[in-house]
Image (cartoon, rainbow, N blue to C red; front, side, top):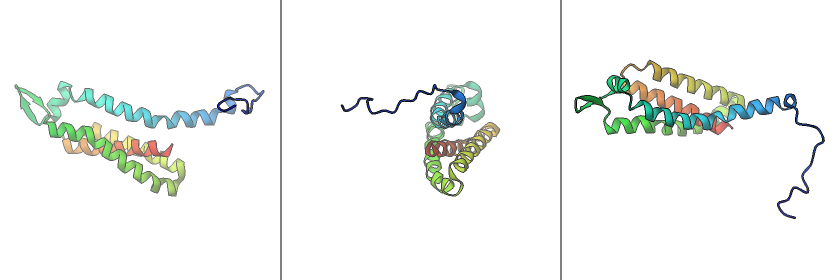
Length: 146
């Protein structure tokens, strides 16, 4: 009977958390790629509308208040996808030499470095763009390593 569980192996051993600790930890860590991807897109769309952000990074004035040009907003929003592509492509090289552990460590380093660069950007659109690119590389790396 196709699709039934008649041939599935059943175990009489109860599910014990301590027997599956490493598998649960690895799965919890690998899901971070999807969480980071969604989180980055969500938080940034809210930040670009904040008055303090516009005062610091705004490059034009509309109706007497600072604003971002559409090209700048497009660049800041889409550079993460470029970083994700680069991170995903570099995951094969990093994973080939360092294995899955090395790939995940590189992903953590990229995400941390990208976040630090963005936090240190004081009115510099270029620095914010580079930080978002590096953060995207970490997201692409961790998405490819799972």
